[in-house]
Image (cartoon, rainbow, N blue to C red; front, side, top):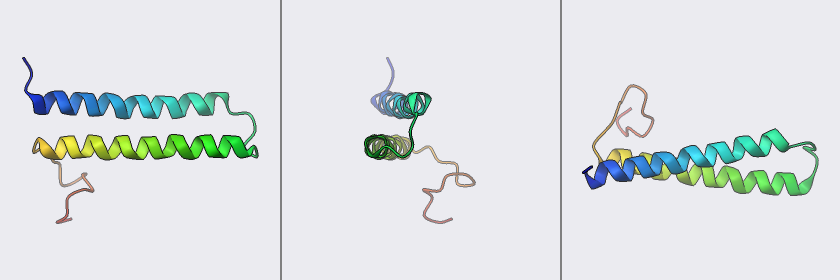
Length: 77
């Protein structure tokens, strides 16, 4: 059985991937960039992506995984 930390990373990564896919599907259907409802929907999707990315990074950091050369979360760089 997988360790809870690994399960948390997997779940957070899956949630992030789904948030990105949802935004991609929005753009696939987008027809009018001037439509205020489209802007509102995109703002919501972008916020969800940001939150999912932060949760993914938190899970990764909690597991002790870090690549300082590419990980902007590294406070020393």
